[in-house]
Image (cartoon, rainbow, N blue to C red):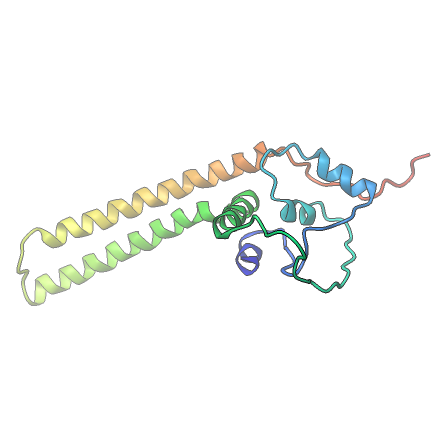
Amino acid sequence: FYRLINQLSTVKLRPDASDFRTFRRKVAESILALPEYHRFSKGIFAWVGYDTKWLEFQNVKRSAGETKWNFWKLFSYAMEGIIGFSTAPLRLATLCGTVTGIAAILYLICVIIEKLTKGIAVPGYATIIVLLLLFSGIQLFCIGIIGEYVGRDFEQSKNRPIYIAKEILGED
């Protein structure tokens, strides 16, 4: 998960970081000032950008009780992080549309070469396949472009500040 999200997002998460943290007041205020409803805490902690001191500790088995986190809860939390800190899934549609369109053009070239050299066994079949691939590619590409606009609107709707001032100099 960490390898994937660090590839998809501009916010870099430390793979071995615990969820247990202490903050200075400025850090806590910066986190609490974010108006987001869906909060992927690991991403938010990294996003605010303050200097972090990492402390080594030995992870031991809990002495009582069991974790409430199962595979599906962890998967859902991971998806929350990917969706909240990356627009890469939206770009996937553009990429798939481009690849499908290129595949349609390459297949069209193969069909033309096959028609010229061997003839075609089933008339119309290749034309339908090429058209399906081509129009599917165009649709996916257009959905990807719309996704880019939606992604930008999504980023703007989070209403995160453009930057967080760590320190203000020159105040009395």
